[in-house]
Structure formats: structure tokens, C-alpha cells
Image 1 (cartoon, helix red, strand yellow):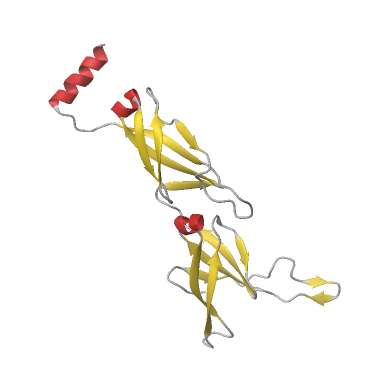
Image 2: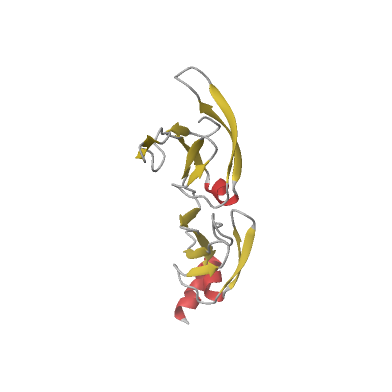
Length: 184
């Protein structure tokens, strides 16, 4: 399969291929496709080129629909072939089943005093309330903001792991304020 992303031909037999009741079942062509986490969460339609016949004998263009919620290893059956999905790692989000985990930096002041933080998601954004005294590594769960369930309704959850941003350069006034806080 070729498209605007790396795709590799696997040529694996379909599950259960072999002898059954004295007959050999036909082998299905199996291809692998790599997609982004965003495409895996939202679902995507792609035009792909399937190799046909022996090398150099041509290919066939197909439009395939990858449903929302697929994950690495998901196998999608089409009329005459199967696609195995590989979801590329995302620089911001980590997937655990249908749950998504994201690390969010907040300021030292917001961790100490609390406040509202806007979190950008793959689909939209969400505002979270930071409680006063929030510690580094705190997990905040947002129900239903993870990956969609492929075979059922609903979604996984989003977990926001709080990281405290410690400034590396402070003004003299900021140093005075922190020094006062230290001695209180």
C-alpha cells in the first residue's frame, strides 16, 4: 500500500487460513498502514495504492476508511484485503488503551494558589481547576475525553499529569518575594 505515509506490505495469511473441512481457505492480502494519533482518535479516510500481481504489474487505487479509536495492532477487514494499523507515537499525548495521558506544565504560583488552566486536546480544549497546593505529579482525570471505543459507544478518559514549571531566571523582585515566602 502506498500513500503519503509509510505503508508496508506484510503478506500474512488471514487468521484461520489453512485446511478446514478438507478445503484450503483463500489467503487474504494483509497490509500495514501507519497513521498519526490524531487520525486514530478522529478517524480518517485515505486513498491508498494496493500492489496487484507480480512486481511491476501495476497497482490499484482504493479509498479506505479507518474508524475513530483504532490503536496499534487493530485489524480492519475490507472486501478483499485487511489493513493492520500502526499508530505513530505522539510528542504530547501518551495512549493507554482508550485513555490518554498528557503532561501539563503550570507555574509555581498557580500550583501554590490554584487557578484555571486551559488544556489543548486533539479535539478542542478543556479548562481544568487547579487546587491550591497542587503537587508535581498530581493526576487530574477528565471523564470521556480519551480515545473513542471502536466497537462500542463512549470514550476513554483523559489524565492530566501536573508538572511544576520552575523558572530558571528570576528578577530581583521575584527573588525578594520568594525569599519572603521562604521565611514566612
